[in-house]
Image (tube, rainbow, N blue to C red):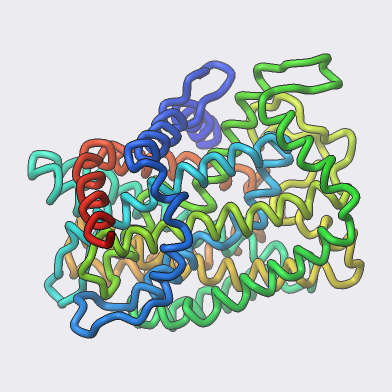
Length: 478
């Protein structure tokens, strides 16, 4: 079995396929989020305004941690607001159909409860390492919350987290950025990769404080600019908005007029791609964001949890939704690419664009001469901040497995993989690698699922503690 076959087979057992009708990770992901949402009495939805207020509230001095709660959230958002919001949404629509957007929303809403629980446990069970840094995340709340006999499960998470950082966090980001810059400006991929890797190295070597400082400056400004332009595009195509929502809701449940009614495979495909792209975008349940929130200068786990859940809302309910509406109202998906039942990204008909090119086409169709530049710039900045955020996640996973002495070798390897994402495009142009981008997205799907499993198990086991702490926190504020 070649590499592509192995990745496809693993992905089928992680997310499901025609032969695997009940994908375990998809069920565990949605089930955990729904369970936590109900057990918390829908607190993440009810307390959303409170969470926004806590984000900007002035705090007492003397809080333990390395960065402010706001900076911790920006670090987490730096890794989520990225190519998944631009290229990932397009891929979900092209493969899973417009209905995939609905399942992205579902993943985000229940994911707010998941992300809240992750934030609570991250601060509750964090440690101070040999160099004085506050470190935490799933591997630590598995070890310290579930007991020493479960350390192996924390190591499994850290192992897949380290691998995912090289894929999700570095190479796929550089690949997408370099592809967009090459298509729009003719910049050769190796040059883009060299500049991106060099810029990332300057920030990554400085650790969490430098990463959070850069993220706190870049993420809010670029996100607001992208949202503004997206609203302009949607406004220009406002007459198509009702039809877009109609497609989202009908396709989400497997209804297809061309096929004469309900199509079970379409329902499954919409769920698979919507949930997979949703978790890739907002990372709820994946276990990456709590690594950043563990460094927050906040002594109250619940308080940091309510701030953490804002990341999922901002990333998917706001940013991803606008990208989806831009694509669905712009009329850029050819009839030949109308989504029916397909096995994976690797079986798209010729000429059907996915990922960044589809989003670029949507913006360019409405804002000719300007749209492609907007997406290229947004991809570059979002992708770059994602590279920074994921470097910290992978670093903490590597430290958990191999100790503080492994940090510098990991950083050097991470910078190499950052450059390699662009170098692969050169191989693809030369014909040495076929469907490399599609294969990369499939590998990313697989890694996020494998990484999420240990974290979701820990959230379920520790859910009574999360519920009790939440009840006590809000009872005290009454």
